[in-house]
Length: 625
Image (cartoon, rainbow, N blue to C red):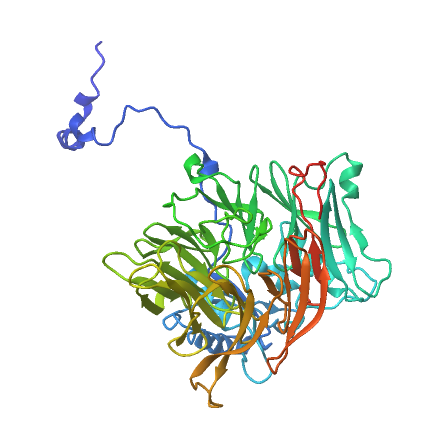
């Protein structure tokens, strides 16, 4: 018996439906491919383990359950006052302590957007919520900080000489350790300073105070590593901006050490790192492996999140036109925000990547503009178009202000601009100045005040014939409306450097004659002509110091007033002071033959002078400090 066909068993209606489902092969051609399946690496999928839309608010009033809805309503009303959150309906969760019958004064708040959460995190921190409650806010990723807080939002103090049982909770967790552990040196009872010295193949971290006749007292010198027949560092060491970490350089990457016993906290893998650059808050680290743009290395620069040790992004060095940037001073292997990530020691350099002072952005200069990237996404935020741009520089503190310089061309004058972003908004020009008859052989020198109160530019204004020129300083007052500026022309002089007084309103201009003789320091002060707030200010020359020998290297004390000047050729050192009455006093002169490194300590109490020599360049095969 023949087997009945399946189609014959279908009804007419079922056959019609089956016919409708048929599809011509040509209809599927766009959806099919003969290509082999590519190997898929699920490790390439970016995993965001952060809850960027959720924050924790502490120090709220503790209320009974019947008053919970009212408290949520008041808190939501407060949140809607934050910029951008006017229409926000946040999800608020307040846990209730069942044993005590009231809330614990803590709320977990989830916003519709991560940007709203970030803004609320800033605005509501230390917000007075009624008369008795001052709110504290934390990102939910930093929940360990919440566990460590007292009811008033402060960190608990440990009993002297007794280690806390829950020590792991007494700070922000960073890759399995706490920030508190890395800052124990700040509680030194003798107020000593910590100094790192590398010589020959040895690296020592020592305590120093002039009150200790023994000299530097070694805290750690790599003894654990030597016991394992390892070296603590392969080439160099450097401090992070706040002194939290000591960076050591190795062939596979860099290590960050900290704590009382200098234990390894983070390992950043990037082969043959030549330079590192931290954000001011030490949240992110940028590394550069020394390759040039011509090598087309797509991972020449890497960015690490120091809270997790994760590499957030890799980037190449951009190809830039061969223009001469200002000469940068000799720099160590580590630098802070605003400094170029690829700055060979003592050479001319083209700044490529720079952190903003807040760490919210980093900039990359191109030949036709600036690309701004934002954290924590590390994605491009916007492009600032400035065709022909040759220099960029961030304000070092307070505000995210970017300075750009565009040289003069046949169709347009030279241009100096300051751009600022507030609350993650697009960058807008707050200053735009045009200049004519400017020497285009090098871009403007940009000198920032250390606290970001002023910025000065130095250009060479040439005559119409182009045969002669004079330096032109322009000083901008950033704390005043519209950032007013004043110009100073130094006739028949050559400006070697400009140094702003930290925490002050004075600047030192190191200059010589056009022939390079007659070295002098001219001190200027930004003066307010009236006691009325907002009154116009003027810049006046208030003092002068003439040097007998050729010295052009100058450095203010960490907190201003005192300064030091030296010559690398003769080793002569002059210690001076610019009194509040603008009188120059010379306190002492000394000598350190062949010195090439001078640095003030962060407290401003000590000055270090040294003769440094690359261990591979030393004729005797031995290095120095």
